[in-house]
Image (cartoon, rainbow, N blue to C red; front, side, top):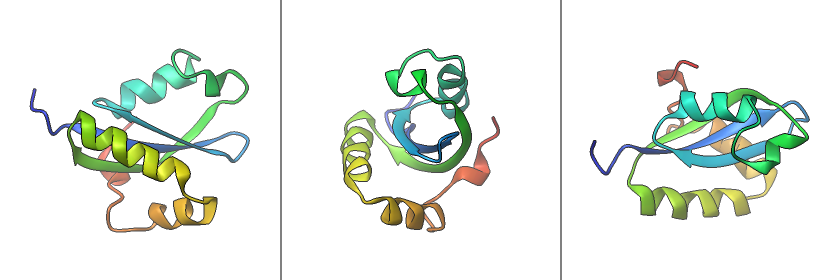
Length: 93
């Protein structure tokens, strides 16, 4: 396993909120959220759709990018979804 396989992801939730996280396996992490394992954020809501994936990170850069994205206003997060950096089409859940 290489150090550059970390992804930053955004999930659209059933309450229309956007959840940002990092993982090395997006499909596994989405399923964990759906099963209410892991992040407390999903105790009161369900993941609806994976809407953003950014690849090519190591653990450190993924964590830093996650923090940056979490601080963005919603409009800027929505702009990420249609940006060239979004690799969501490459992932099957």
